[in-house]
Length: 178
Image (tube, rainbow, N blue to C red; front, side, top):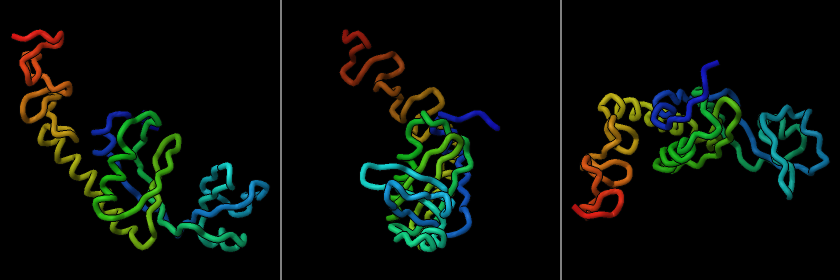
């Protein structure tokens, strides 16, 4: 197994979204419900109820009402659970196309659940996100448009300082003017 990746730029360049077969459903059930027969992909115990994600046919066979029918897109990149910005980048790419998403993080990968009727559009959006990230890297800039030295187009670093370490008002890091 490859090591977990924290760097957002690298995560996005190696995203590799993969649609999983089937139609999946989010459903709720009482806390005393045994979810084993429906072979849940994921479960979560909330104060109000037990939430399950399972194949639609298993949810219906158990007499549960699906709350959300979805397609499951697994991101093949081995993402670190402490990585910052991956969920936001995915949500932004899907939001730009009007696609809702529910993201579940697991130990090795992130999993995106989108409305089943928008699955192809979601795959296109995630593939475009990866492709654009690869192109930005090839151009020598990261997701924020910064070059390899971490400077934006105006030559400022992440703290807004120029190459001499001065801010817009000409002050150095200690607040002194030139």
